[in-house]
Length: 486
Ligand code: GLN
Image (cartoon, rainbow, N blue to C red):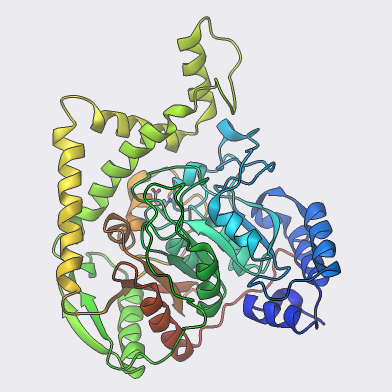
């Protein structure tokens, strides 16, 4: 069967179940393409030979009842994988080999999938372009000069470039949805507490959430069904009734009320984004949804709130990297304090150091009330805005990002303009809600643009359904030319 790597996850699952393809054939195809795709720099660690072994083993005794039977898959290098190096894109974890598996990846292997390797990401998931990675930037399969977005940049590039049929990323402030939008792929940030954080290298624990990144909505629903489980090993995991999202997927969204928040019409928003949003509204109407204007009055405070809460939590979470128990340790240093200092200044990159300093400052006595406590209060107001809106509507439609993918290097030295990328995504994390980005059109340069559908907490099925219905109307075609394959 030709063009295996062009098939969607759902097609591959069907072909393996129907015995038209073996796991070995599928795994080989993705390994071959990944090997020809080194220029994208999507992988940090490859695990091809054991992937092939596992595929052969699967074929000897195939369990075709599983949801991901013999499906090869690469994952963001923020998920701890037992006995396989996990770096979080950082020098400080360059040699870290976990002795345990994250719950999310374990769920995936339990359903028959096979690890291809670990994908590049911004250092500790801090960034919007994958340029903070110790392992170098990642190229966007859409165009050589473009960033793939971040922090799940390697994941987005690998899915868009068909190096993996599907993947998982993490989203603390937009890191699944923004790269999905930049690469013409689908990305779901689930409700906080639906996917376990156990074994994910922590960035900001009250915001971090794992989620699927895929070629289409149906594939996204299938992976969400696999990774969303209650886990007592994560104290913030929530025990609620989870749907079989892919089985219950429906395009019937007639009568659904979709809100359009006026505060998302921000100053300086490019005309193309406004036009895309209007088109999205029309698509939703064509699907039978009812459109209502809503207000989320505290939206403009979301970004400053996020950039206090996230660095505060990061500064605390990253205190453990001190060169003592694991990870990189700098040479020299006269005493323990000097060893800590050298290790942390040599082991962390500039952006991570900036966040640690901001976070330490906003938590310090004297500034705690003025910054951190204040940010917590504003976070609650942002959450209240959504609660109010959801008395009137079932979901909210916004653009995913304020622009299409930008050039490698363009924003690297301007952190504030980099942070502005998250303007439409961070409110969703602060409120703990699910949000999905779907590709919805192209800008004048031909680069993809995404729309975001935000749901009520635990209402993943509803936003997946809306996305599924709109996807059919939008009929988006990603322009991938394989320019990187010689
Ligand atoms: N771009 C945001 C940041 O740099 C979001 C990152 C994320 O979601 N992990 O913090």
